[in-house]
Image (tube, rainbow, N blue to C red):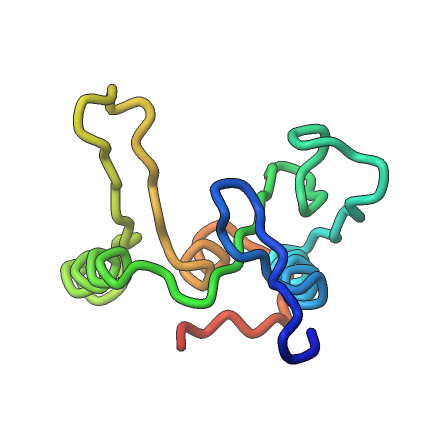
Length: 126
């Protein structure tokens, strides 16, 4: 985007990422998981996942920075994983909500190691 031009915004006025960035993220995730990116052309929200896969429905979100507390929770889980013998996950709970709505978060590298994916993809945590 050229200098002085306005930045496109999405819902809630949040800045949107350039198409190139989020598309590249979707392609990378698809390659890691052994799926393929589903083009957005002609689909509505919720019609199809970002990544077509045999047994996963993958929605990709790309942000410049993720909340540090999520990474801290995963680091705590990893430290207590008995040297990698147990799968480190963080369970995120919103006050006042039922636990069936909680989110289970794990690193993509750990997910691939435990559940499989493409063999040649780079999934090391940075």
